[in-house]
Image (cartoon, rainbow, N blue to C red; front, side, top):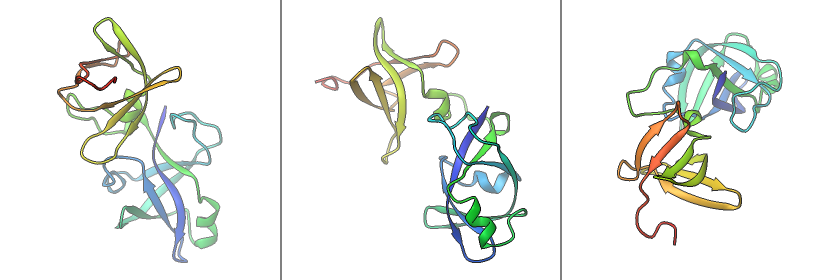
Length: 174
């Protein structure tokens, strides 16, 4: 399984540097890895392959505003960089660094059933990151609930059982 960590959104300069929008909480990750895999399209969960992956060796990493500027050994000029514009950058799941206990990658949370005791609200389909805390989007058919990712609300995450136990704050469903 491959996990998307960024998307090439543009070229930068004429020497093959690309501008990458990080799809990770830790943009410093790009400094820690040596190789990524570029793929033209990724599915909604950004894991499955729809086109061949191209291995790219990271040469330099620097930051500009909220973007990561990267040069790859295999990309020598702006024309080559233009050819991979829009591509997603991925890593094999086995190369992701382990998180501290109680922390999870977004792809691990998406798809979990969200329940409060015997009552299940639906499936966690998306994680929003608006600012101070994440917000979990839980859908059950047409119904959508936005649940704040707070320790007072999220009581237990059981990846093996595919379930998240919550205690919703009063008034959240009103």
